[in-house]
Length: 398
Image 1 (tube, rainbow, N blue to C red):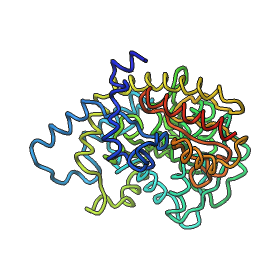
Image 2: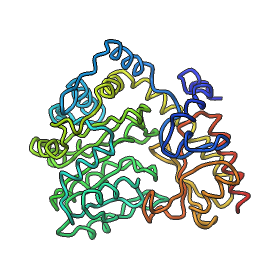
Image 3: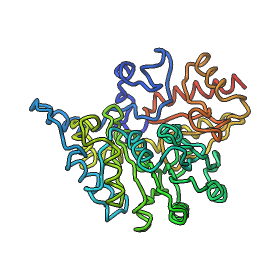
C-alpha cells in the first residue's frame, strides 16, 4: 500500500464507492452494473479537498444566492489570473480578460463560436478527445484532422501546414494530449505558435490537464511564449481534472487581447441571464485556485504511483504495447492483436466486468483505432482489481 497516498487522503478507504454508484455518471459508476469496475471517464474517484467543501458550506450558510456579475465573480477571475501568472508563466494575464464559463467544454464552444463562421475550418489533433471536433461542427465549422502518432505522441508538422487552407481560422491544441498522454515540448509549442502567427490563426489551447504532469516533464502554456502568440490565444481551463469538481461545471477562458475578449463576451451571451456560471460553483473554484494546491500536488504523487502500478501490470500481457504517459491520468494501450477495439471493450465488459473506453472514432478520431483508454484516478485497491480483470480478460480473449 502507498503510505503517502493513505496519509494524503488517497487511500483505499477514501473512495466512496456507494456514493459514486449514485452520483458518478458519464460512463462511470452510476451507469454501470454493481459488479462492474469502470476505468472509463477521466474524473477522480476521490472527494474534493476539504478546503473547497468548507468554502461551499461557509458561503451557503447565509442562505443568500443572488445573481453574480455576468462575466464571473471578480475574486474568481482574479484567482484565475494569479494562477496563470504564477503557475503558467503568463505574467501579463489580466483578470479583466478572464471569462467564467460553466465548464471547459462550454469555454471551447464559446471560443469556436467567436472565431468560426459557417464553413470555416479548424485544425484538430487526431487522436484527441471528441469534444474538439464536436465543438467545431456544433458552430457550423469544419474540423480538419492533423495526426499525432498514438504510440509516440509525436506531431506531424508537415501535415499540419499542408492542412491549412484559405478557410482555416483556428488551431486547436490539447496540452497535455488526451488520450495519448503527451506533454507538448516548448519547441513544439513555439512552432505551433509561429504557424498560427504566419497564417493569422486564432489558437484555442485546452489546458485542463496542465496540472496533471509527471516528473521530469513540465507543462508550458503556449500563451507564455511571446506577446504575439498570447494575443491570439484563448486559454481554456476547467476545475474537473485537477480538483474533482466536474459536477459543479465551472471553468474559465483567458485571451490575451482586449478586443478578442470583448468579442468573446458578446458571443457568450453572459450579459443576459440566459448564460453564466453558478455563483456557488465559482466560490468552490476560487477556493481551489487559492488554497487547494497542496491537495492537488498530493493527488499527482498518488497518480504517479498509480501510473507505475498500471504500467507494470499491463506490460506483463504478451502482445500489449503501452506508452508511459507524461501527463493526464489515462493510459492508451495499443490492442491491434485483439481485433476491433469496440468489440474488445464489449467483451471485456460482458465477460470480465471491466469497463474501458474503446479507441473508436466517435470518442477520439480515426487515429485512435486499435487502442483502448483507461483511467487510473482511483484508489490502489480499485485499480488493482480493475487491472486484474483487464489483464485476465486480454489473455483470455487473445
